[in-house]
Length: 153
Image (cartoon, rainbow, N blue to C red; front, side, top):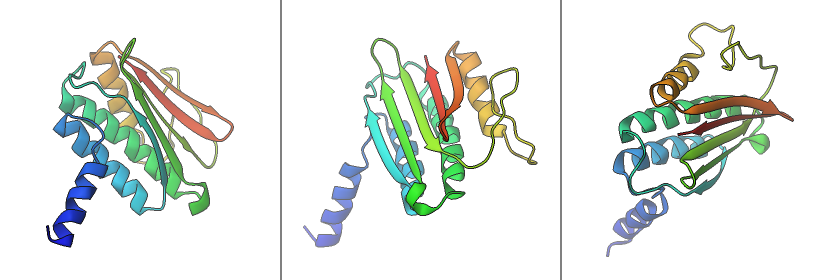
């Protein structure tokens, strides 16, 4: 094989996070974008072949969460930028995205982080709507300078 084709195949294999093409494309795009911004990615993903909900809806949820984590990391010095993403599917499908952040965060009565900036918070409201639709548990929390989103279906 031509070296360029070989390299492209290696990239495709390396960026395979799961067997679902929609979710895999979402994870590849958003984690790749984060890496390009100097963010260290740590992932531990056990994603089943058959997802518990519509792959497109789940992908939107992941996309919103990863976009928020990426934005938070870009406000930090490069040596502090990190996103940790974990997923398990036994005994239940659960994923967690953790990242450091700068500044103060407050949470509303619904458990969502609040924002005073215009056009912010749309992603977290979308995540909450996904969870309500699928009767999923969600938890947004902070500890020691780290923000964590956990969703259990």
